[in-house]
Structures are given as C-alpha cells and as structure tokens.
Length: 107
Image (cartoon, rainbow, N blue to C red; front, side, top):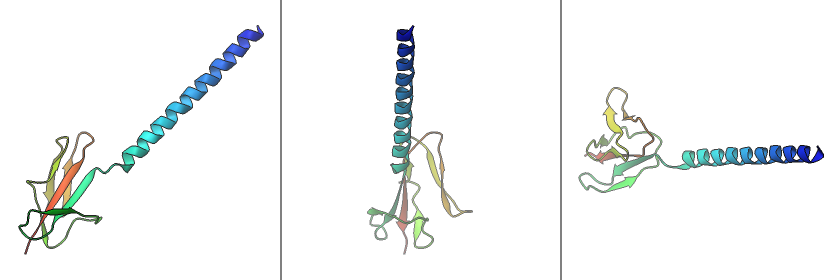
C-alpha cells in the first residue's frame, strides 16, 4: 500500500514538472515572436537612386517621400497598399508575415 502511494506521488510530481516545462517553452516562444522584426521600413537615399536604407522612425514619412507600391511586398503573400485618407500603409494579412515597405524620395 505504501509503495502504491509513493508511486502515485512520484507520478504527480513528474506531471507537474512536465507541465511547468511546457509552459516555460510556450513563454519563450512568445518572447521570440515579439523580438522578431515583422516590418522593414526603407527610405530611398536620393531621388531616383534606387538605393534604400532601413529607417528607425516610428511613423511614415509625411513629406519628401512617396510610397513605392512595386517594391513594397510581404514574404508570405500579404497585401500592402497606401491609404491616402489616413496617410498610412495598410497590410492585409491572413497569416503571420514579414513585410518590406519602401518609400521613394521626391524632389
């Protein structure tokens, strides 16, 4: 009888350890997801140069640039377009995706 109780207690402890391990794996995967870049925002370096640098700005350019619909794409097929009404980029995505948004410099 004592042997049976010890076995049951061991099984319970092992179950708790496995559950905690799975929860910590889920948490680390969630953190990895937040740390991954899902948007690359690129600005042309000079009008007509075709060379772009990644921007660290937190808002879309208001003046001196125009959205480049031909270069702006997403890796997994999401659609990207410029919304004139809100002066912002709209990304229509059904799945997780990484998108590259390009702006051309204007004179």
